Length: 112
Length: 114
Image 1 (cartoon, helix red, strand yellow):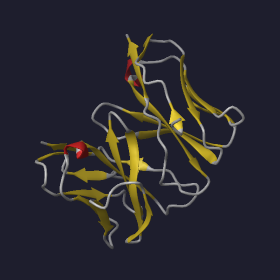
Image 2: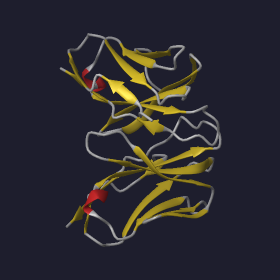
Image 3: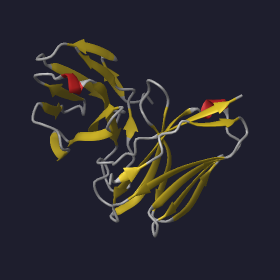
Image 4: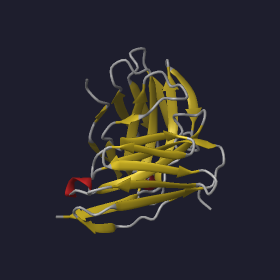
C-alpha cells in the first residue's frame, strides 16, 4: 500500500459545481497536511495548509482532515474553469518539513 | 518578490551524458529542496540543502547529487543519464526550514533523455 493515495481522475464538473477531492494516507506520523495545485507545465502551488485534524476555510476552498480515518479532503465551492488543474495532497510528519510525501494527484476539469 | 527560478526550462540529453540543473530560491530563503516528478511515480523527494549542507536525502542512487552555494542558490547534477531519468525536476525553497515551514516550488526543468 502506498503511503498516500489519490484517485487520478480526471474529475469533470460543470462551472459552479461543488468539488470534493480526496486523499487517504497510511502513516500515523503525518501531522501537517498540504494541498498543492499544479497547472500544466508549471510547478506545484501551495493552496491549503492545515495542522492536525479539523477544517480550514480559505475563500472558496475548505480543507478537512480526519486523522482517525486517515482521510483528507479538499472542497471547492462555485468551481471555475480556472480551477482546472491537478490537485496534490502532501502530508508530512511534525519534523521533516522538506520531505513531503505527495499523492499522484487528481486532475480536475471544470467546463464553462 | 520573485519566485523560485529554475534554469534551463527544457533540456534534451542522451544516455550516458551528465546534466546540471540550477535553482535560485526566493530571496531570503535558505533551504532548497529538489523533487523528481514522473507520470508513473509522481513527485519524489531527492534531497534538501540548508546553509550549504545536505540535510536530508531521498531514496535515489548516487548518480544524483547536489550542492548549495553561499548565496543559497543550488544545483543538482545527474551523471550517466538513463532513459528513466526523464522527468520534471522541481526545486522548492523555504525560509528557514523549521517545522512550520512551507515549500514554494519553481516551474521545474523538463529533462528528456534519449
